[in-house]
Image 1 (cartoon, one colour):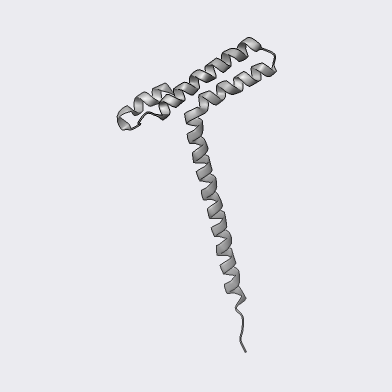
Image 2 (tube, one colour; image 1 turned 180 degrees about the horizontal axis):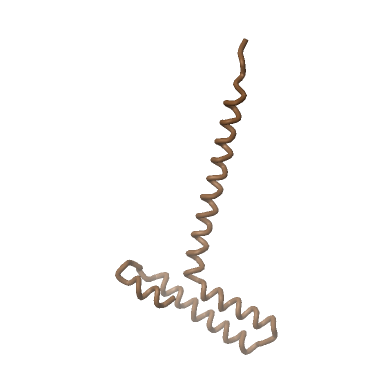
Length: 98
């Protein structure tokens, strides 16, 4: 008679559950790193656009227009910074601009 070793199957499934959780954590970490990168590149632009939307909804047209102009300026700065080569030699200048 052949006996089936149930313990061996349970241990294998635990390993698979751990593997799935590890993959999930890695994916979440990569998404978080990407979000941080996007926010550091376009954070001021997004902040200015949200200020324009908020002021527009509050009925403050002059402040909304100023926030829209500020968003355009920040977008131009972000575009310029995106085209610049970054390295350790100009890192301090890049940090000061932010």
